[in-house]
Amino acid sequence: MFDIERWQEIFETLGKNKLQTFLTMVSVFSGVLILIILIGFSNGIQNGVKSQFEQDATNRIFIRTGVTTKEYKGLNSGRYIQMHNSDFEGINTKYEDQIEYKTGIYNIWGGQVTYKRENGNYRIEGAHPEQQFIENASMVAGRFINEDDVAESRKIAIIGNQIKQDLFKNEDAVGEMIQVFGINFKVVGVYSDPGGEREETRVFIPLPTAQQVFNGSDRIRSMAYTIKMSDNFDEAVGMSMALAKSFEDDIKTKYSIAPDDRSAVRVNNTLEEARKIYSLIDTIAAVFWFIGIGTIIAGVVGVGNIMLIVVKERTKEIGIRKALGALPSSIIGMILQEAIFITAIAGFSGLFLGVIALNIASPLIDSDFIKFPRVNFATSITIVMIIVIAGALAGYFPARRAANIRPIEALRDE
Image (cartoon, rainbow, N blue to C red):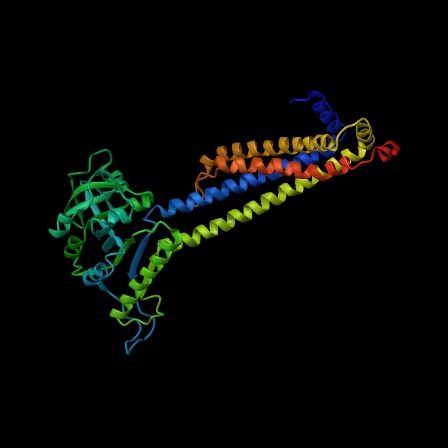
């Protein structure tokens, strides 16, 4: 029930300690504001990292080779390890049950692409049809590579949306002919990529076509796979790590590479990297919460001090109340109400200002690793509960002290 006299008492009491009350409220306000800002940016970092992983499939394993750096089994260091179609096919057969999508890759960096009078240098990438899903590419127009394109080594091309804008402007690209190093290719599709412009400056063509046109024979530069995901994230990571290690061991065994030679065979496992990054994000979030809660605690201690002052100043009044029959619970309720009121007003002000500040700043932040720094509804509710609990704790001990005041002693107090 709303008791106007109780609220009049609260405001009158706070008015007697204006400076202390104001400074205490500023402390709580700043603590909540700092917590909101820190949590918002923690969420922004998480969103940014997730967007980076969305550029490719999260469960992606990428294999490429380089030059050996160690002697092994009588073979000198400095050997370049060249993979072939047979390596790709061997892994596909051996690990068929664990593999989701797969592609061999033969790429050319800085390929000259021409359409009428427009031209530019882009990466040319020979691949299989499943490259679309490994790269998380979405078709804007037309289609991606299909199995018939691969089987017949067709001279078709799928271009990124950025290339389409560069070369075709407002024209339709599908069905048109482009030249790659002077060789004609028919554009059958335009794709977009979550990675943005950098990932949309590639031309995909069938792998056999790339090998034939660019004198690649049966050579491939790299291989990419995604694994079949488990519902349990830790199990999926474990399986991905084991599979990546098996891929690496198979290639090292075939080409007589030292087991500890990290330069000759490089295997990138995005699922393992995702776990490391997400663990780091969780740690950052925990640190931010610790700092924010610590700041709020400092403010709550101030609220407790204010209430102790209030109790001391009102000792005689409390004694009279108890002499007239006031129950200890009513005395405790009165002090708690004042403490919660101070904490709630300051805390909610910090909460609202923090949310507004994040909403204003969010569209202005242009960073690959911080995106949309905001606080969700569940977090806001959690902070509201923290504020209320903090206010209750701040007032509890002063309230207990007030409830234990003996009327005879209170009436003697000066």
